[in-house]
Length: 509
Image (cartoon, rainbow, N blue to C red; front, side, top):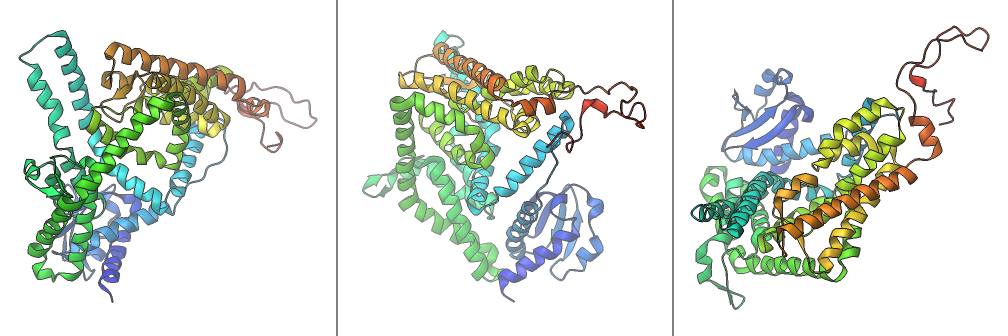
């Protein structure tokens, strides 16, 4: 049996014995052990697991650890992760059309699961891996971004001059080394050893690269940025996997990390840093050109299409672009425009609240989800209200388009609005705003865009978000109908349908 088949067979034998993909929350490995986070350890068939030829033993700790031995564990782990992805992608959920808020939310969750299953194409799975690399960095980006904004405010006001240098160091330290974290997460996500990915990516920010010439130019520390770190770590993963295939297990611990860092490091220094640096510069130049020449139209399209991009999983491609812009310019000009999609969603939800005046269940859901929506957390409104209803999702996109067009127009006029971090939107983005014409102007433009998104989303939904059939189906009371004598001979009193609903067959659905 080929080595790859043997490793996959081992992974396939282990997975059902630990409760299947649904029971596995995290996967990692060390030198000898496969470390699993399990939702329910009672589902583990430990006796059968220990009986597998490849398993040397099990250890119960904060993670459930399966001892496979050096060399073997590094080969089995990526096969195990792939099997989990395949099993989860092959079990889409389905739910019927319903009327109450709880059932509507269930329908939205089913739509989300179905869309996630449809997104399991190689390209979209690749984008999901890219997102998984950058998403863990968001808390640090947010924290450092807010500290940078506070420091800028103190410097402009001339306050606390003894403290502002320390705040600048705190805010900038993470960004100076972000390439290392990207390299670490990249190797982890692509099935390599994380620390080796971080070690190769660290070359990019090492000051000593200033003494090296490549392509007739002297390299600069940080050249290539996060894109260079990502590419370097992916290369390191492939070199490591090649070594795992061909290096004898007895020499694996010494030879594999040495060759991985050496080969990947040389390619990074004499190729990837230069190429990634050129791509990073082109991204910044294109973003500036796009918004300065066609800002209103670009903003309209970006704001209007962002929710569908999220549904298709394509928004994940924007994450490294945001990070590159933040690394280059100090802020990303794209995020405030894309955040207008959330404003359109809030406006649409407010219109649904008024239009479905008799559906107390859906109105209660909207009332509880609106505060989160205002802070930029739109999933409760999207999957609990607008997407299952259909038309309100489209009109929410219209609201986002008008809000994005408003912010884009000011960029076209030379007043750029940006965010120093990715992740938050809505009102939560205010502490992270930055621009080229002062904080007051930046805040005013962003607030104006939110207002335009709210109003446009509300009006579009109120007047065009419901057909008569949709209103007749959903704008009904959730209170039980009072018992009454039936006008139909032989029908018992009180046999009316609770809640005022008619069965779908009689409603012609």
